[in-house]
Length: 148
Image 1 (cartoon, rainbow, N blue to C red):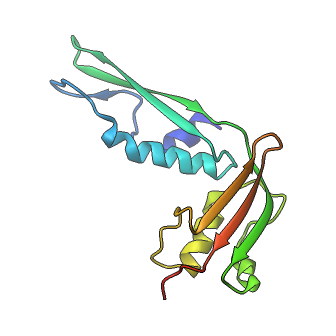
Image 2 (image 1 turned 180 degrees about the vertical axis):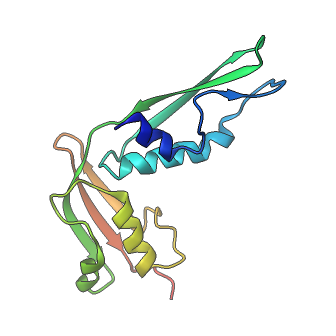
């Protein structure tokens, strides 16, 4: 991944953020950054991507520095796609097939289309069985509990 791609995924536009008279910096405000990075890496099959933020402070210059250690983990490919509680034809709307790199974007679009208003990250709706050794993930979408 290029640094420009990563920067475009993050709400912070500058690598250095100047804070006047800071005393502490919490990571509650960094949550969108972490989620954006997870989503960006998830589009390229890195479903176990883990960003680990750390801060350092320069009291004299009143600066806070945010450094993020990015553990991408293994890249995953789709080994199987299953569907429960719906006509298998709905899978024609999923722009992801067996053998492709796992990509969260077409999965999100598919689930938002067929389950509007549902939490697409709910593990009861979207189940992933990972085979870490082979870099494979089997997907199962469960529409049985969808709201009408």
